Length: 88
Image 1 (cartoon, rainbow, N blue to C red):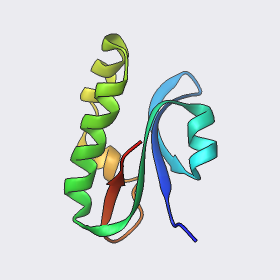
Image 2 (cartoon, one colour; image 1 turned 45 degrees about the vertical axis):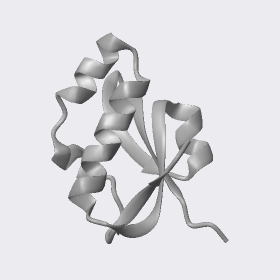
Image 3 (tube, rainbow, N blue to C red; image 1 turned 120 degrees about the vertical axis):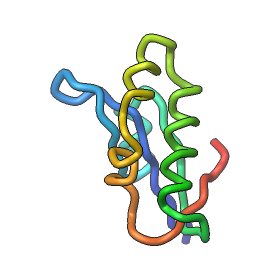
């Protein structure tokens, strides 16, 4: 059984935010997403990578919104422990 989770850039109640959840749910609701699984990289490193990957997948006007979000906003949606990014 694979243990994977998606982190996505979403529009919720008129605001751009970051969400995590089951891959199918995040895929349906997000403007872009990244899939992660348990791993050895520190949460802060993974949060920075997720931020960069999401921004690269977004249109330039929307990517500016997510560039302005702090790493803490990305860390908040990560599960505890280490992780790694799954190529998607």
